[in-house]
Length: 126
Image 1: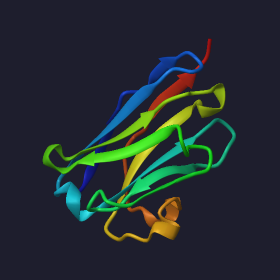
Image 2 (image 1 turned 180 degrees about the vertical axis):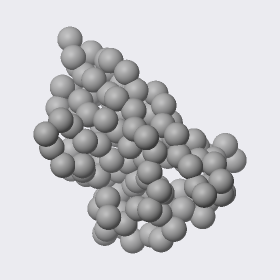
Image 3 (image 1 turned 45 degrees about the horizontal axis):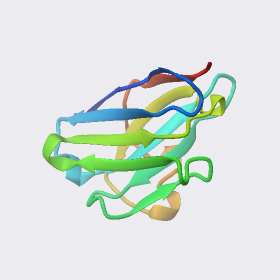
Image 4 (image 1 turned 120 degrees about the vertical axis):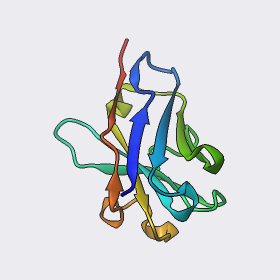
């Protein structure tokens, strides 16, 4: 059974940066495409970024383009979400998720993913 554990969330001031990590266990990470999602209070879960099993192709939500970077280190079975230029609108619980398939046009859709982490809280506030 694949397990995902996020870390790296916290409180940061507007304009600051955070790097989220997601450690995967139970299967080699390079079998899976990975997505990062977030959910703010009272809002639906939205896709932020995703990356293919080989780490060569990515996709980002418009809200994340130019500010967030998704990456993976298969040797460490870990994936990352580097977030720069954070604003209060980025405040949410962030989740990582894994999927055995890859379709770039659909990789920001939460319905594709079978495995989820427990989430890590990101709060952007002065």
